Amino acid sequence: MAKSRGLYSTSIGVGVATGLYGISFGALSVSAGLDIWQTQVLSLLMFSGGSQFAFVGVIAAAGTGGAAIGAAMVSAWLLGVRNGFYAVRMAPILKASGLGKLIPAMITIDESVAVATAQEVETDQRKGFWITGLSVFVFWNLMTLFGAILGSTLGDPKSWGLDAAAAAAFLGLIWPRLRERQALAVAALALVVATLTTPSLSAGVPVLLAGLVAVVVGAFNWFARRDAK
Amino acid sequence: MITIWSGILIGSALVFSWKILGYLVPQSVLNHPVVSRVASLLTVALLAALLGVQGLTDGGEVTFDARIPALAVAAALLYFRAPFIVMVAAAAATAALIRLFLGF
Image 1 (spheres, one colour):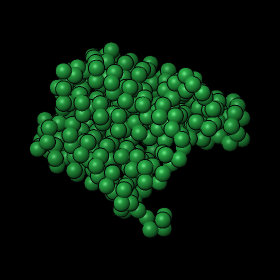
Image 2 (spheres, chains in turn brown, cyan; image 1 turned 90 degrees about the horizontal axis):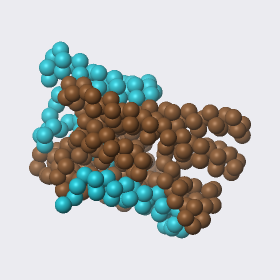
Image 3 (tube, chains in turn green, red; image 1 turned 180 degrees about the horizontal axis):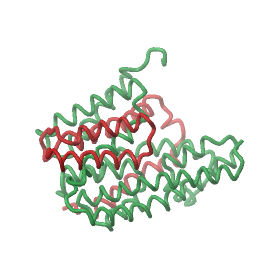
């Protein structure tokens, strides 16, 4: 349906918009205690916004001890799970085989899949996936570097409100999901569990414990809308 | 001893494992309703937990400070569909100004 030119501008527009919040990732990562290189490698290799924010968020709260880094890795891993479902959706469209699956896997993220699945024709779906994925990759990495350099020139992160910015980033990532009743209930429970257990558990663990809320609520399908059954 | 660098590399490999898994396993496995529901709620739970830890705790203690009005500003901007970067910057500015002038 969308003309090719429209598809190009949508795909690149999404890349630029996503790249812009790469600035906040770069700045927050540096204020969490990672250096510019570590921040940049996260954007190059991990390349999944939610997982990256989680990784540096746990480090910011828990420091760089072995247990903290372990919790940061597991949090990032668990937050990446949705990409697996995106890949399932993209596999029959991309029809990649063998090692040719590695590159599309790398750019299988929220934005590329969202643009691809919004197209009606399969060739447009493929084009949308590739152009969006690659433009997000380029802009996300450039803006991460910019944000990291910017962040490293600021002094005390708190006096610039960067701790509030990190919290706001998580609020922004979760916001679109809060209209669903079940997701809202899980979010509220998880927030309370993680916050209240923070003083008594070692840092990083409360976030993982809150993940159990999702497993229990999801397995028993609590708080689901009755009409959705 | 896990260093920050090995954490970054292993963490990146772990995140990639999901992305490649979806291209390797048969669709029926991940399309099971319970599996996909838990996975989708897991994202919500972890982000909400991180919001709580980042917004309401400091140094391992529950702390209410300038981050709360900053989050209220962020929520208002999200409600009016402001761009992500604008919302994050406004939250930072709110907290920074409150600390500068009111000192909490």
